[in-house]
Image (cartoon, rainbow, N blue to C red; front, side):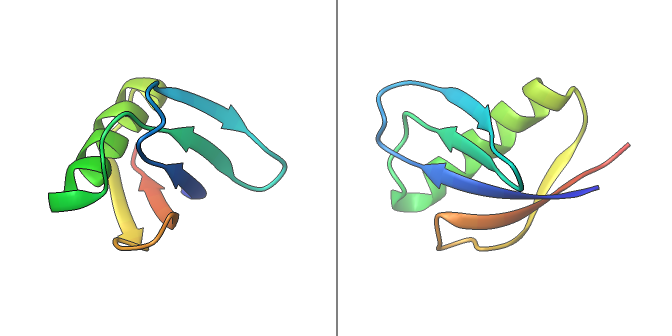
Amino acid sequence: MKIKVKAKPNSGEQSIDKKEDFYSVKLKSSPENNKANLELIKFLEKYFKKRVKIKSGFKSPKKVVEVFG
């Protein structure tokens, strides 16, 4: 299943909010050195309890993420 995600790094908290057609995810990490992407993957894997992979948007807040299983 592919989902759209809008990542918000440097938020000071971790949270997820389901909107109409995408997920808004607040992350503690900064976008430098891929830290926010790694935190996003771990957070979404914990949320969905499935393996997750970023398909597009590695350097953008708007991403397409694939959830396996």
